[in-house]
Length: 224
Image (cartoon, rainbow, N blue to C red; front, side):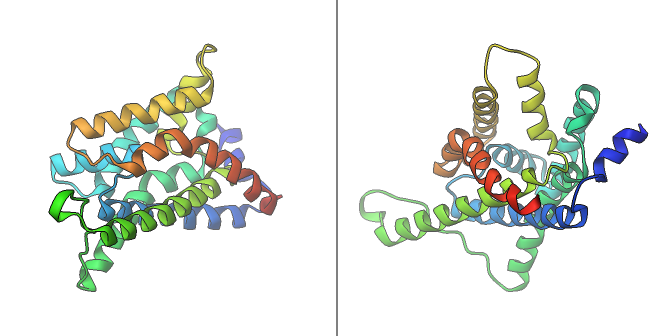
């Protein structure tokens, strides 16, 4: 147990890693907030959590705390090496950062939802272009921040850790295939629960793994 706790902080540039991890996870929560406002879907995990939060009348922060705690118990049982400071940051800060951004917008008197795409007489090209451009920018930011959080190597979120555990428990499928299947399952579950599955969700299911891996290699140079 002593070795387990030592591995959590005995890394080069630990303060830099902690700051980068904290900031990146909070920024991921802000991105999820604006993804939700764009109504083009969020990351698969958030699709399900937002749907569950709506069903039970909870804030995203509280709902994610409950779901992540349940997943965390499984991770402790199966592979404690996946746990670190980043695990706890991600468990709570993504959801509560989403709540905090909503609080700021409410206090500022802003509650702007981008118009949904409508065809026929209701279709407005300008709305589509604004939404699409904002989605691409947010997607790039989300991937960069997700890459930072993973690259500092301070542990992974229970959601991410479980996909690694599943991949390591078998040899038939690669991690990439398992991750796509894992994300796809949560996207489907979220959709069945009434969550919004859109372009952003689909792109994340099939591309976020490779994109994070590629971006992470660039970011790691900063930490070495």
